[in-house]
Length: 367
Image 1 (spheres, rainbow, N blue to C red):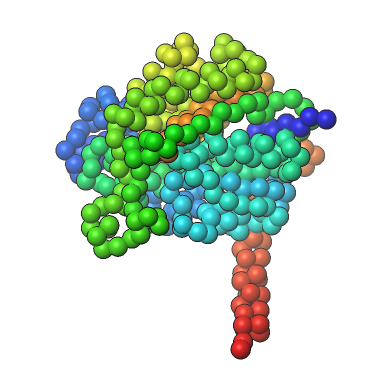
Image 2: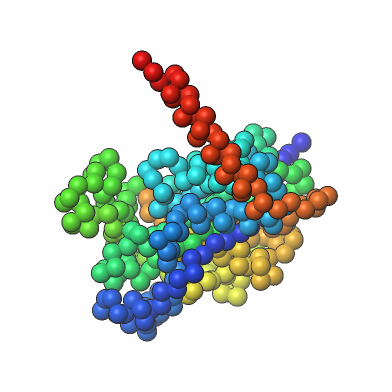
């Protein structure tokens, strides 16, 4: 019997603070018209001091679980794709697992920059389709505003914060994730990067002083690369799914630049009416951009049961990829569950387990 991985839940989380182009014009030499004409971005969301990659991911995950009507402790796997994790380790996904009370879930982070959600979605789907797991949470979450040099007008105008999540569930009914393409080319690794903070260039006074912990980008190289691979990856994924481009109801691309999205649409001979675009309000949210656009499309009634959807992205690495899925929505269930209500139990469990480890340390850690 064949198994399929269906998207049964979706959720998004955004900071309340809005940073407009006019606000940025007060910080660097730029203006609203210049930013709009070159990127299509009008505003972006910026995380507050008490909002983090993990907290945004948690909020998006709980909303997705509520749509799917799935209890947190029924989740088998959590993947957080992020370019701005809470820590080098532990994984941000583990923090989400603890916060929502997914007591039997394995959890890890996936780093593939802006293509990360595509890669993570495929990894989770493959785990389901091989029978390894039944339910998965795939989350894209970012607080890129903390990696931006707000004096660099080439990058500070682009990025924003937010999170989006999908619930994937197993079914023997055809649908869900139909095909995926994952590609990379490390020869372009210096085109888009954060130079310092890893093992090659650990944090020092000089790396901080020289701004090496901020995003560095060769905009022209990234633009040429992106306009080439977006259409290419989508066509490959559509072919692998045994569909045609005319069968695709909606293309949901990575929201990096409106001109890149328009060029990709032309390369696929798809009208912009069939392409989801929301970067004007959120900017480039990296791994969160595709699920955010998908969540809004679903909530606005642009995605319905049976629709074929193409998700396509590109990012640092260089990486690129696409997923074709058939949208089905939540499974029918006998009773309603409220994932948010499990959160206080999760906090109690976390406190109890910390206490037990402390006692074990006192007993077994003695000389």
